[in-house]
Length: 403
Ligand code: AMP
Ligand code: MG
Image (tube, rainbow, N blue to C red):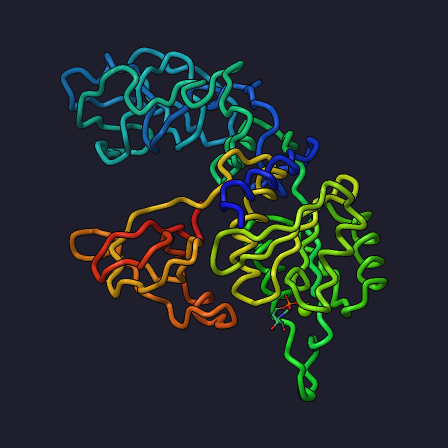
């Protein structure tokens, strides 16, 4: 058996970032910037009012209450028209440009309108009050986001405010998923003796999509080396990475590792990783396309995805933070185990107690076929080799569904 980090290093070394691609802003959410974004415009582009009210010269409000004639009205979107002269006010709406001559805004709430065309200013204002100056959000020439930034809704908004219609990112991997196994059925027909339903493919397609990758269904392949070889070779021309499940253990019909060995040559490695679940794992490249030979047991395939495929695919997508965040938690019920040379990943549910400490409780049955516990878990607790953890002991947890 090899340690987890050695297996992870081997995989990551073979999965460099994909090439850059310019993508429309509409499709940029979750993508990673391949180049810094430098502003070419000021935001706001002009001095404007932050409030509905009256544009004035602040000096004219000294000794308020003061009454001023209202000489014009300015809406957002209007070009700045006439200037505000001494002793004058212009009615102005949020976002409208500051008229020349004015240096402050008196908000509507501190005014009265004694007669149409006149305003009574009830409070003195300071120069600059409620004025948003040009460039106070973004200055032209400023580097706003470095390369490597993961684009969220706010980033998309900033790019839009600067007029960027496209953005330079790393390409998002297209991830093909196929299942292997003569026992598998992928439609609603009643199960014949010995058959089970294919759950890995839908789960792995969902896992790929949930991590922001483009998931491609490559179907179900029988336990037939020729069929598997054809499926993998074709897939390698269509996608950037392939996830298979099953066929990497030591059974008579575990063809995946042999076929992958033939297609991937000496880039292929069949590993026994010192973890439970998900000990067997095959990895190799068909040309530039990495193939992750995940184990067949439903929990194992998802845990293997988490530990090997997801970090590598994130690296291909340009991410530099590859792994799930880890936290320490109190393992309420403890976890008993025997020494077996492996790091155990226990499916747990996480909560915060009154003192805001993270607490982990078992999410259910921990065998590798008990997918329900994986489904309801939001963490994988790392129980090191040994005799386990006492109830109330501390455990490190991979926090799923974050980062
Ligand atoms: P294997 O490694 O191919 O021997 O598979 C290990 C176990 O996982 C067996 O019990 C398989 O029936 C099961 N299995 C393999 N592939 C799938 C799948 N796509 N969906 C559900 N169970 C599977
Ligand atoms: Mg199988």
